[in-house]
Image 1 (spheres, rainbow, N blue to C red):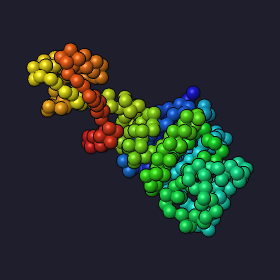
Image 2 (cartoon, rainbow, N blue to C red; image 1 turned 60 degrees about the vertical axis):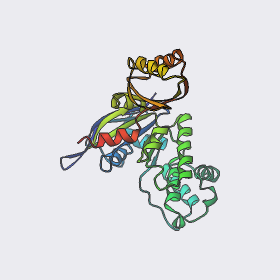
Image 3 (cartoon, helix red, strand yellow; image 1 turned 120 degrees about the vertical axis):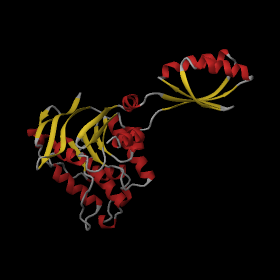
Length: 306
């Protein structure tokens, strides 16, 4: 089921295209990462999708509704902006009541406390936000985005300013929400986090989507080969040499010593041939590691292509 569909979305300021004819769609329960360096157009895109900015041109459909009906469906969406402002003299719980009224939901105290508890602010519900750290304010922003159990969630840098433990908690919550059917559109500079949780990734460069796909698809489009590292033991030098000679049919031998051999292979489909050869020549294999290119490498190489 398609939740969000974007076609040719563009935003111009004085003939400068901040977002340049981007197109993509999101399915129910998908976690979609929207990546790019600062100034690439990520926040501008979110602001258009959530009605803060009006597109210069292009079409947006959310829940099969045209963009003109956005006000009717906003209650089904949740938004965490990158920067949130709060009233220092109001408590976290008072803020939740405030945001619930803005969204058009009843201020149910039990429900608001449960949301604060979910993001790790339960014991701070009655503390004034002026005393909150940046990380605690981020958690409050996530809690308010969850009011009304949104079907589509926009999270702009959801784990920035959070400590490691809190980041892991929020990461696991994102996975849980998606498993329950919530569609998540997120930006993040934490590429390891994106690689762990996102089902698809788009890389935005100078307002254009340059790459889009699953992590596996991005790796396949980027890699000329797969690196294989094998820990082995051979009883004789002759057996090892016979195995090496046979592996030349399937792989490029990059390095080796008396414990490890590193190979470049075209794809993982040749691994059984390599293992069968080791068995045939009486080698013991203790470990096989497939080293795929990380998202960080893909992103950095892509951004430096200019």
